[in-house]
Image 1 (cartoon, rainbow, N blue to C red):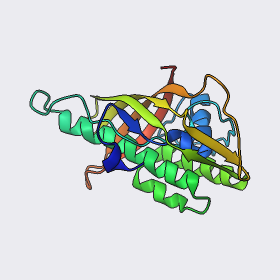
Image 2: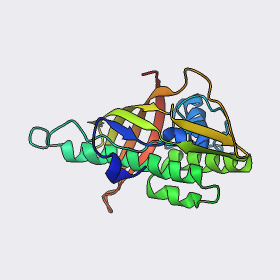
Image 3: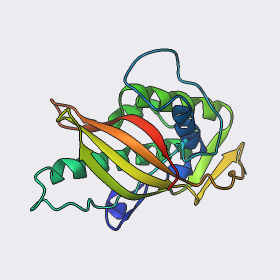
Amino acid sequence: MNEDKHMTGTKLNTRCGRSLVGVAAAVAIAATGGCSNSGGSAPSSSTSTSAVSSTPSSMPTSASPSTSTSTDPLAKNKAAAIAAVIAFWKKVDQLDALPKGDLTSLDLVARGQVLAQYQYNIGAARQRGETAKGSTMVESPSATSAVDPLTYKVAACVDVSEVTPYKNGKPRSVPPGTSRSGWAYGVTQDPKTLKWYVTTQRQTGTC
């Protein structure tokens, strides 16, 4: 996901589908009711390749926020929250395509349960010989503020129709009707570094 290249337009090329690994992670998260910041048992290693959860393998391009800084005083934060989701998917895509990529680098874009879930699922997928190539489109992203001033909610439609999952180097088919789905992300800003991180994720249905 080249952020600069995808920061224009109404679609985000987040390569969500690029990693079958990502899609599996997203699906696993959705199956448990979404990500939360609470602790608990180790994330499940679902291998499903259906929902946009490819490692919900990926999602990177970004559409510039529709809000205007001249009319919306929170526009800057909304844009930053959306950019954080894009950066998250870009990193996931990179790791999905690189079997030996450093999974600890995910902490640059995610925290909490999302960080733990993706590190676990991508690692498990690698052991099964699963990777993915392609680009995911994040369509119509929008951000809204939450009760916590340091947290924003980002909603988007993720399309992984152009992502091809692989098993031991051989392409695998994706179940029909699973290439597009809606997702809601919780994005939190670190009060010290001011950097934004994806902390929660849940599937909201079709789109």
